[in-house]
Structures are given as structure tokens and as C-alpha cells.
Image 1 (cartoon, rainbow, N blue to C red):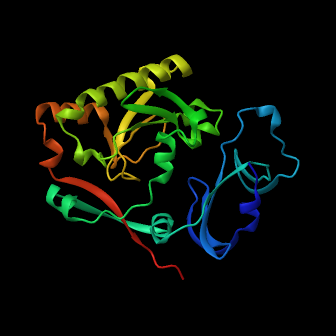
Image 2: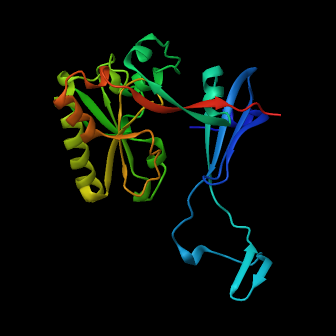
Image 3: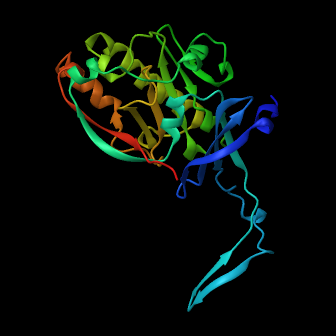
Length: 266
């Protein structure tokens, strides 16, 4: 691994930021092509002896409350997307959110604009991230999400289950034929986490996003303390139960989701 690409990145515009998650997203140029650089501060090390306040400056005091501006070294996680297309730019740009109520007909009629899935197929074909795979059978595999790969904290637990079948784009494509696979994903995911990471089931969230961030069906496993996206998170057990009640449940009901409307940057 090297940082040559990162050194060649030339930022041109800040397209998004989030003070809560300490994230900054830059649009720029790399080898005459668009590129996106995502910067995010990593969590503090949970070792109090490493803290130093030599350079702290007090800027507020009232009774028992005092505030300081402290300069502390903190690692920054950098993610480079290159080359980036317009879909990437729209996805990562600052935006407002609106609620859509989608029927199945609307889902079928829309032209799904999505990012390439080569990175997913690389995983399924064992070309990339083989070291992150924690379980595999003939139907699906489970691997560590890249955020969890780079973390030492169980609070950042995040595994993904990916089916080898490529025509299941989202939960809209699920029916009773997939119940066995979904139940196996649920069971094996929980087993792996409990055995490998010693985390009890009551602390494990298992869910699917709708809308998904990419259109190859996948299931998320995270720590219960994980701050999710409540409107998008649909528990896997609920999905299984719905399909058992009605095979074409997700081809019959309207689903609400939040979509983004890009804010024009000055």
C-alpha cells in the first residue's frame, strides 16, 4: 500500500461537512479526473494516560464550569474515491432531505442510477478484501466493513452479509424463495459475532437499509450503540416475518424513504 494517489490529490471545493461526526468532504482533481476525499477524525484512544493539556487555553469560566481550547493529536481517516463520477458527487454533496412514498410500480419504472458494483463483485470473486471475510457458504459471505477493519473498538462493530446471487438488488426483490438465505444470514451472522467478538445477541443490530446505499442486496450487523439512520433501518427479522405472511409483500406495499436534494454551493 502507498500514498502516491493521496499526495497527487488537488482539492478545489468543500462539498460537505458534518460537525457532529467530524467529517469533511472535498471535491478535487487527480490526474485530470474528478476525485473525492473524505476526511473524518477517528475516535479518541481510550487511554487517559495519553492525554496532555500543556497547550490548553481557557476561554470560558462560570462557577463550577470551565471550558478550554485544547490541541490534541488525533488520527484522521482518509477515504479517496477516484475516479469519481456525477453520481458520487451527488451522493456526497451537502443536501436537504425529502420523504418519498414509493409504490412497487414506481420502483419498477424508475431507472436506478447507481454507482458501479465492481468493488462488490471483487469481494464475491475473492479478488479483494479476502482477509476481511469471516464466514462463507455456497449462498453468501460475511465480511468486516472497512470502518470496523480500521477500528480497535467493539462499538464500531460492522459486518456485511452479501449474497452471491446478483439479481437481488434490494428488499423489493425478496420473496419466499429467499427466506432460507435470510434466516441463514441472521443465524450465522449472530453466531460469528458471538464466537469471534464475544458480544451477546442483545447488543447486536441486524438490519437492511431502504433505500440501500448500493443496489446489491446486503444485510448489516452492528453494535446496538451504533448511531444508525432510523428511517432507513429495517430489522431483518421483520423482513422475514413480512415475507412469511405474504410472499410478495415487498412487491405489494408502498415504502417511504428519504432522498436527498442537493444544496447549491456558493
